[in-house]
Image (cartoon, rainbow, N blue to C red; front, side, top):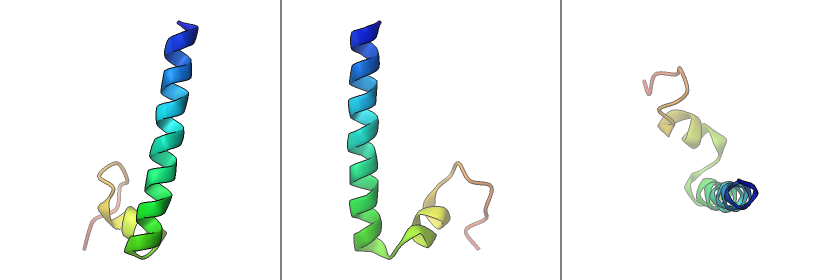
Amino acid sequence: AAGKQVVFAVIKEERQKWESTRVAKRGGPADILRRSPRLPLSPA
């Protein structure tokens, strides 16, 4: 189980890095808010 948790931690970290890179390229947190299906905001 410990090994699995390490893998998940690494994946999470990589995803965060990727997200921040993508945000920097695309125009900031507002873009993620608009695109994220998990947030209760309508795309307008």
